[in-house]
Image 1 (tube, rainbow, N blue to C red):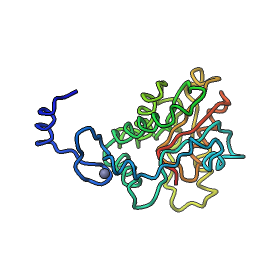
Image 2: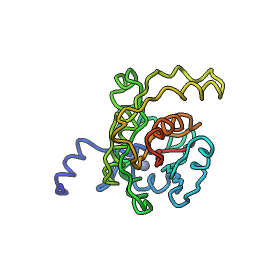
Image 3: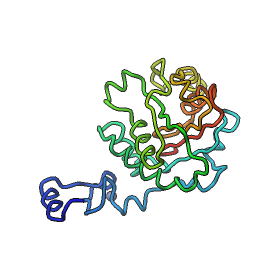
Length: 227
Ligand SMILES: [Zn+2]
């Protein structure tokens, strides 16, 4: 723990700002101020086993549990946080949200997960961005849940083309066959928590869950936000 004098000295030269509202952070606050954190729209899906996110996957892939920290609203603070996490070189936002979320769901998990697996980026996109935002979220969750995570459980074999001009069916087909299971021996028979930054159509998570299900029937998902 730093002394107050040290903190005051540092913050004089390196003021820290909330990533959601841009107000100055006070002592003890990290990345997101207390007010923003309290006002962020939490889903509380972890309190309802058959929540709306889990129901979205009915008939598509079998999930034990479905968790999401926040509700995505366009032009809101959630969108801003996700945008910074993805495009502004701020993986620390993902780690922070993973730690916070892990602490929230920890006590509702009756049987601990064996392994956390993030949805992978294609390697050219990974090289361009420098990090996978879902890795950052996995890292934070891993710390809070005391569960190991691996970045290469699944591999993205084909780069998905731009999605905008495709129909819903074409989009689904576009991601359905682009994932491949890599660490099969580590996944076999294990309780897996599959994580992504945001769930929209669910097609990506569905495709990943389906490749994991070749080796284990016990899969849950966790995302930062649900759209
Ligand atoms: Zn704030």
